[in-house]
View 1 (tube, rainbow, N blue to C red):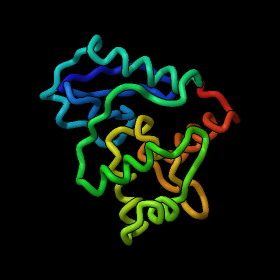
View 2 (view 1 turned 90 degrees about the vertical axis):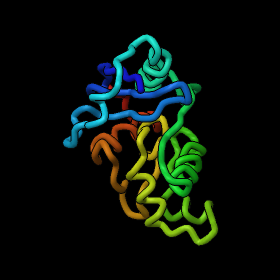
View 3 (view 1 turned 180 degrees about the vertical axis):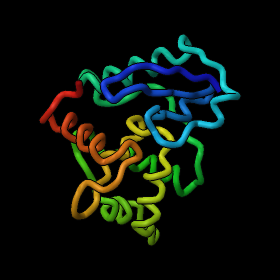
View 4 (view 1 turned 90 degrees about the horizontal axis):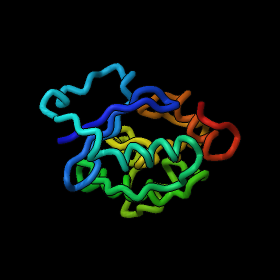
Length: 159
């Protein structure tokens, strides 16, 4: 796996991927270290396009991504992540709404759990999933989630 680390308005980010696509995006101020990184190779050039797309999104110059994503997860998680990727820029859905759209008796807790396990926050925009009352949780924390929602609504630029 190849990775790159770069500065962003959200702090240091790590992107990792292979020939199938991007596998991980991590906020490096997270409490838990990324253990598998020891076996990865740094390759800033191969991930330059993905880095630039993320930075353009955070600067408000991009609303979607063209880079391939290949998140690792269960079939149920990948189904939720695919549905999250269909939530339009600047809009939100509740965990319950998404569970209903997925149908087949998908419980809200399954949607919430898949969102929490999202290995590609921002690229798979789980920040657009909110609780019925409040914004809900986010891997980067509630403050970061609110910043992303505000940026997408045009209320505030990321700095």
